[in-house]
Length: 365
Ligand SMILES: NC(=O)c1ccc[n+]([C@@H]2O[C@H](COP(=O)([O-])OP(=O)(O)OC[C@H]3O[C@@H](n4cnc5c(N)ncnc54)[C@H](O)[C@@H]3O)[C@@H](O)[C@H]2O)c1
Image 1 (spheres, rainbow, N blue to C red):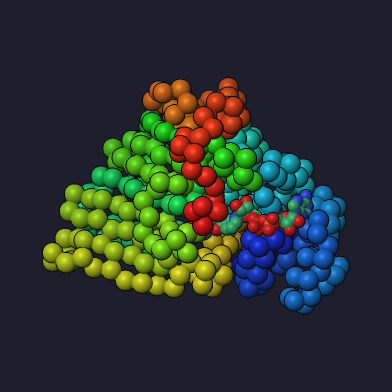
Image 2 (image 1 turned 135 degrees about the vertical axis):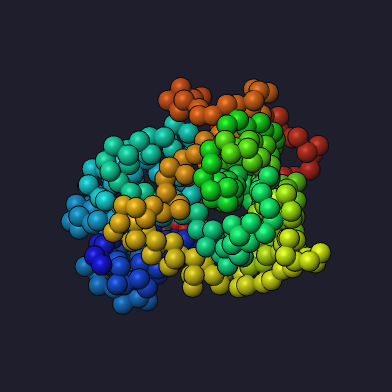
């Protein structure tokens, strides 16, 4: 097995989880460069992990020019995606790993996807909750046929579209084995979160039909169905598959439940570690180990590959277009002709759809 040389940008809250996993998988990856604009943060992480100061940078391009890595990973806020992906193309990396949301517009999502395709870069976007024991258990039940034929996929999360909506759209596609959406209808309202660093309507809901006939209904943000006390806001998410003979669900709090052919009239369920525990012990190492597998073997395509992420992003954009234009949106959307729907929502959504009540994350969280 080849060791892949990695250079990473960003050691914020999430960047540290990525770097920890690269270090943990020391038989698959070799961290040869680490960069952050914030020198103090960078040094603190490096000292804590006993990393050589020789691999530390404050300039991403200089790091890539010096280290010429196989893999480039960037873990920055959503405002920084395409310029980083362009660096990946310029420095000829083989693998690119970056965080959700994959972009802040469909045009940008497409530009990154195209760049990766044209440069033969294997790229993954970090929708890693599909490795949660709860979602894996749900998928195992569904794939065994114990709920019969799948007819409907439902996803809910309290956090908004660009925060966890992008995750759960990816899990809908994963759960339905990658079938593509044919059409989408949607509703959005509330503009306060369009100025968040993860720009989104306050509430997004949509309905779609896949090419395999399965349908999906999903809702993200305020008003979405809640399954937990408010202090569990960030993991108050659930993916449920309904079949002809029952249902199965999993959540980010480590829980799963089902009613199946073999459960003999009983509702069954179980509980694993919560997301906070699983994210560094399980999710990130599994996600990155499968990236190394894909880098080693073209046939082992990663479940978080950029093509599936792009389709998820396209569906979310279609929901917003449907809501603003009051139409059904048929997919695929021509990305290069696409309007900036987020800018349009900022301009056109009414100020106060919730009749004077404050609407912002502090109210939910
Ligand atoms: N997949 C998940 O479960 C999950 C969970 C949390 C956050 N995220 C995502 O991770 C991303 C990052 O979130 P975060 O909380 O770590 O953000 P953060 O702001 O804590 O960290 C970003 C870091 O990038 C650095 N940075 C920014 N621009 C840079 C540049 N040009 N060169 C070098 N360094 C630069 C900043 O100094 C900062 O340290 C977001 O897109 C967020 O949505 C994903």
